[in-house]
Length: 221
Ligand SMILES: O=P(O)(O)O[C@@H]1[C@H](O)[C@H](OP(=O)(O)O)[C@@H](O)[C@H](O)[C@H]1O
Ligand SMILES: [Zn+2]
Ligand SMILES: [Zn+2]
Image 1 (spheres, rainbow, N blue to C red):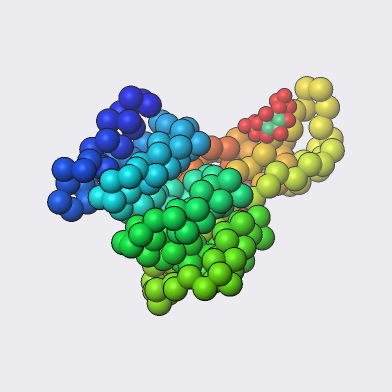
Image 2 (cartoon, rainbow, N blue to C red):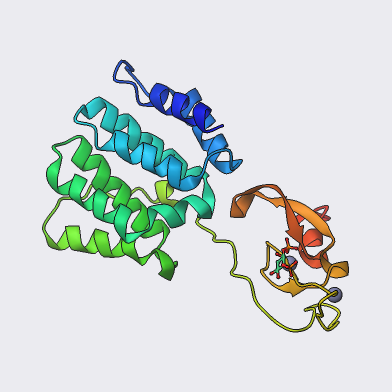
């Protein structure tokens, strides 16, 4: 699978392109969402292309990064919102000429707005404020660009009894977690699986009975 990713990355950031190769971009987004390529590996590959001396390659890589942040949900966001990656983006903003510099500033501003309620993604906001303080000119924020689903999968709770039926966990009565609410359940109360696209789970993952009903409500309006 990784091989596919690299092939599409080369295609999506080829210096011969006159405009973005959106097919390859979508293939890359899919392979990240399906878990065919590790998020860390994908971001490392994109980062190398952003750092390319060739401004066309760098721009296509930034547009690819923008699409991945918009469509790959929280697993990808948490890799982008790290101090290391934001340090890299800050350096790009300070050392590259336009249009690369302008695109980097635009992305940092958009993400800072989109992640404004996510304390664990603070590195983005810190980078935005720092560059602002240094006097870098940011383009006008387009709210629409920041309206992607930045919802994060909930962290898993721990307890000694099932959240739903209160049965005591033992060496045979094992603990299980619902990926949608993060609560802890016995096997009986979490025997269903579901995809959870809004949290980036494209494959069937374990969910508790009430989350299953919420995710699959027939929408009886
Ligand atoms: O089977 P164990 O060795 O107890 O380990 C448990 C499984 O890994 C569960 O995965 P699952 O939710 O996919 O079942 C996880 O939710 C629990 O936290 C773990 O304690
Ligand atoms: Zn139970
Ligand atoms: Zn649940």
